Length: 196
Image 1 (tube, rainbow, N blue to C red):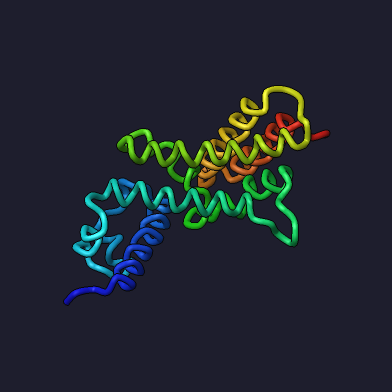
Image 2: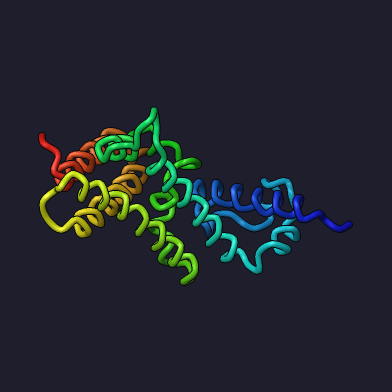
């Protein structure tokens, strides 16, 4: 039975969104194609009709998650774009740390992407560049002294690392997990020129 173009597009979207969520929750290597297909309401054969490999799906799923994160950072809320301070507060919140399935794809996959193929690394790199560019734009707009690019890269790295590390220690030491978020927020604010 032939699937319409519209249904094929819906199936592809379901696969990408489902894979993005599952990869954030359990990692790229922690979930198989049969499980992704089933969770999307499709067979793993349907997955291969859309993607030549799991790696190709992972690259698109990562790009999808990174685009959502970028939109969160650049879409107006209550009539204004989020300030740098609001972005830092939101990203480094306990709520965002604890919501792995809907959180930042970069923090969820930071340690794993280095073990994947170049296509996946390229998507991650593109997402990192987008994130750093948002911070760089804020720093330039507020005339923060120093090299805006360097500071933006440091902020993005600090945020991603803080979420990943906070998640890693949360079960064993919840207070340390929260301390990591607070320390990273303070340090990112200092880099951004916030007054204490």
